[in-house]
Image (cartoon, rainbow, N blue to C red; front, side, top):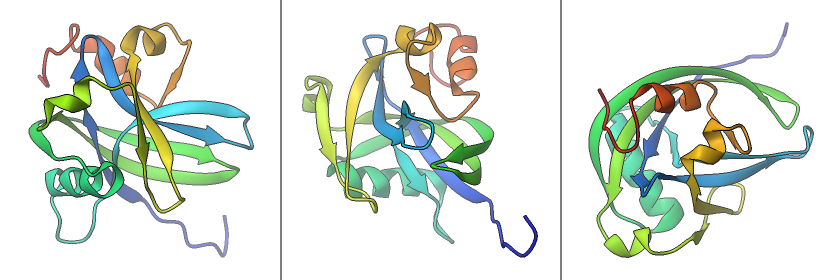
Length: 154
C-alpha cells in the first residue's frame, strides 16, 4: 500500500511434540471468524539468535524452560490477520520442555502482549486432515513431509 511503511517480521517458533501431538497456542481471527493454532514463539530481537528468542518467549509467555534441540526449517509467511496484512520469515526449531510435567497437562494459560491465550496439545492428525487450522502456511506440509511423528528435523 502506498504511503504505508510495511515491514517483514522475523520470528522463531518451536515444534514440541509428544504422543503424535503438537504443542500450540490457540488464536482467533475475528474478521475471518476463524480459530487457528500456531506453535509458540515470537519476534526475534536485534542481536538475538532464534534459539534465544524461543527460550525467552516460552519463559515470558508460559514461565516454562525449554531446550532447543535443532533447527528444522524456514518458512516465508504472507498472511492476513484481523484484516491487516502481515509478512514473516519463520524459523522453525525443534524443542522439548525441561520439566516433564508439561507433557501431562492439556491446557495452559499464557501471557502475551495482547493479554493472553491458551496453549494446548493438539493431535497432529487434526491438522493433517484439515479439521483444525495450523499456521504458518506451509507448516502442515513440512510436518507431513518429515516422515512421521517425532522424526526430528532432517
